[in-house]
Image (cartoon, rainbow, N blue to C red; front, side, top):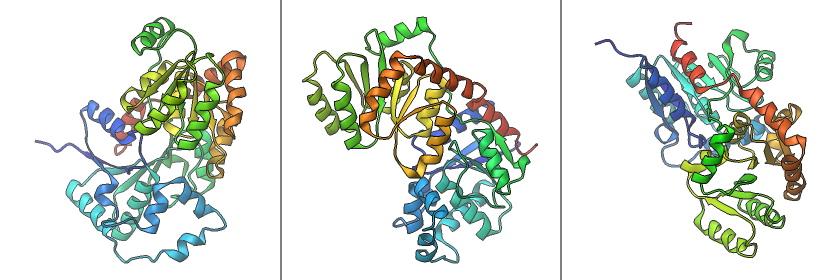
Length: 362
């Protein structure tokens, strides 16, 4: 029996949106390749996180430090080992599975794959799915064979950095999420227990920011139903108690990730912390994203999205109210919705999967 070629997908716990699993399912559905997903629990530091690991856990923070004037923080404090346990583990995986190539879906996974390839003098090909709207600030080296990027601006930036054009594929991001047409939407809202009228999806990661945002929204009265994503039971209880003082405002709490996409699909506006997968899903759905961010580390991505009319941005929580009214009551919401749908209309998980299974033959 002929061996099916194997694709090794390297991921890390930074991948909260399940990109590795999405791609693996799409590839397996083709029936031509086997897929093995390896997380950082298999190749990361054995006993505790190293300085590099801690920086890479945040991804953007590590990239920022490498480009900033303080990049010496990493170089001076880290002592390179001749042959780390992480490299040994990756080497063992390569020998065990003998993959056609390695696909990296997070900055940390990419760093580890490149590190192993160089130290092992391996000839394995490395593909890097860049999960951002602007070019990565690290990882541009000869060890990476192909970059899969979201847009043409990322490709242009990589070419300027020295990457050959043929080694960069513009394919969007793998976050397919189907839209409901207007007739389906009515019944979908009923199934989700949502009343008729405007619906606002809220996903704010920081506890304090979520509390402040929630309080501001309650003060506006019954202008919309608010869907609050909150997995923390104690925080959910606290917010619920606060909402009892506003009985005329419709509040729905989402405590599990399994239902998040359905509620997002039923929404008219989304209020979000900066999160690439959720923003991308909003663009596909035509749900205008109102992003709360004043973080300089992601300013390039925020500025890019703003310049293309794909989001609105609230630098502070107090800015949310005015922007929300604009998105719900003026043409701004419709314009951003149309821009988002147009931006993502040619991207899909299936297209990326097709590229991945034909990669070696290209």
